[in-house]
Length: 415
Image 1 (cartoon, helix red, strand yellow):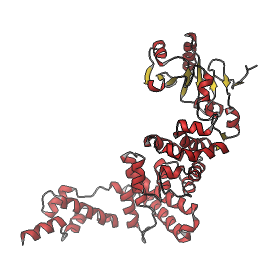
Image 2: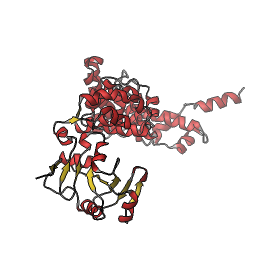
Image 3: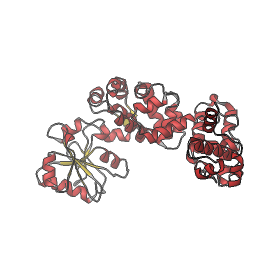
Image 4: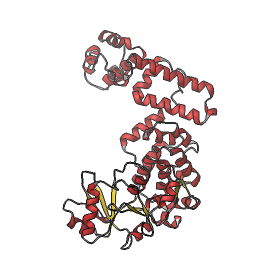
């Protein structure tokens, strides 16, 4: 029979042998050691565990002295990391007080406030996290307001757990979320972005974005997001940048991305997606030349992503475009399929039959920006009619073409 406060865990091993051996070594040295947090929660959910966290009464210095290969990865937070064949094992000193119970009492949510003995397979669950997990309920440990005040990022983490685990916040937690807005404004934007990224690709992102909207947290993170954005996101593949673009449709995109400290490469892609959205805006959007221009600007994958984004938007708001808009988007998709079948995708990587040197020879000019102008002109003409992409065809297009730079130079010489 389990001791008071303990529940029997499933019969299979709690952790790989390397984790069990590390816990045993700490215990032989007189320290307690327990698996805690997400690895316990995920094991109870039947999900493969890849990240193992041990909470211990040992200080980081004691762990470093005991385990030669331990690395001081987070001494400020009491954490050292032990490499192993099972993956890195984080070993952290109890967060508050000398006992496991004190440590669990200061964790964020009950489903994360469980501990597992890796040697005996027993679970310590003082706050009912296992029952909450079974009921798909997200509940704070103790006072929700106090837990969120300790770390305002927990408010966004709650939404992320809604998105990734399909949990629903209880009334006390949801009521406490609006008060976290002020504190969340002081959290490093990189930490906010990491939580938001994980939220957006979760299978329950729609519900999580709805939670952010009705508690005012969305407005704190990025002002001006659409209240129906969750429905758009839910209809998209789990591409984090595409889903973020959908969430940002109604916002000042450049400002929003800057506030999230978005890496430059990701920011460029998101801005490009929204600059080309809606994909059916041009009157001749399904014309082969327009489709080739789209491919040249967006690339193969993002041209298809733009179709998915517009379809998701029309599905979320059927009255926003009507039947005509859906027909245009269907025509674009069909046109892209035809180009793919003909091997004509990847036109954004188009190799012109004349390079810069060939253009200079054809024009009888030296290096200068007029060469770039000519190459862009030729690219546009080839996108309209790919059959022109031969050396002779391109030279014919350049006959009589006057570069802007050359025109200005000529006019100055004749004054």
